[in-house]
Length: 169
Image 1 (cartoon, rainbow, N blue to C red):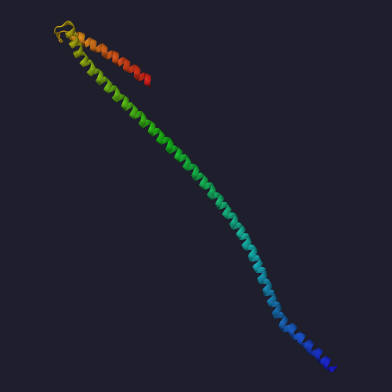
Image 2: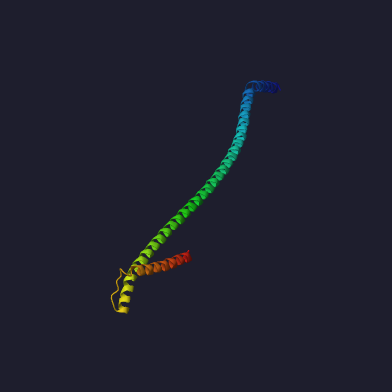
């Protein structure tokens, strides 16, 4: 039994030494581990919050980019329409200019043809008259009659040309 008492006393001394020397460093180590775990959990929570905020910012930036792209597309469509309308207007103006120029050229050519035909008609009339009456007719003495006939012919041709160009328009 004495050995038992010695063993109990030694066990108590060992317990006292362990309580004073081993447990405090283990407690401190456990406290540090606990603090590190708590800090890691807080950091994880902060990282999650930051990730959510970044995700929200990314969504907002994406929406802003979409809106900007839609505005750019709308502006491009408006610009394309303006260019198309401008090109069409220039094309129509060019068409009108070409048609007007062609009409003026046709009118000038018609007038020249009428004048040439009228001059030639005077000669033909004189030849026919000479053949009909079988003698030479002096064109100078009948110049007034020939000019009057040519003027009447010009008036008929000009009147019919104006009526046909008015009908085409």
